[in-house]
Image (cartoon, rainbow, N blue to C red; front, side):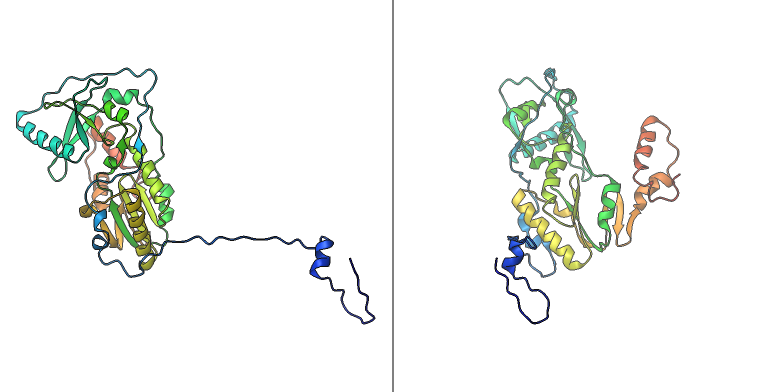
Length: 324
């Protein structure tokens, strides 16, 4: 190392080479990579249904098939065909035919170890909802545990939000395909022969866990969103932020195979009903319709009514001043 001594008064000067040699400085090479963000249209959302027509209606299709795992000591059970009212059999057959045409179920002619029962209920629109009754199958299934967020865990995320949309996943569970072995486990009897589910049915003990897991994986890519079961809330502090978040959700949903129910979606509102509460720019408020069950309902007269009452109370306890 060379030093130069001068007669003039002044501070000592060290160059880069000397500082490096003396260990006074250390040179680091920093390599940065700029993430490419997908550009979304900056124009306000006027009609999301026109912008994304393929994302409304039909049945979704998530990638990969789900496999149902059984316990080692699970013993197969075969249920006999239940008797159904004669006046409902034609309607039941029409619904089974519709589900078969949608490739949700398929006829079974081969021998199967498991044969479940069939049950059905009425939807709010009066149509028949056909469900699997896997009482014995559920006992043999190993559950895939996946946590559903609680009210306390999500409420702070709405802080500052002023614009809201609520998206309803169309036939949410049916977006998940079953592999062949799992599909055969869901075989069920009917007055018209045996069928099996090709897609995840309602009633299985793993259905909610698996669907919530899939939804969480989708929403990991979407800022300003929260999903509980088949309900997704999109929010933003400004209209521009909300619209950007909603467009991002639609793009990710298109890629992941998630579709929405147009009739149940609520787009760009100043308040929204989500998780049993009303949300707006001021926070969470009790839903008047649900609060009526607590504040005005007569005292429970049987175990079922008591369970319903107790089940509706915890969600409102943090915000309802009349609950003690």
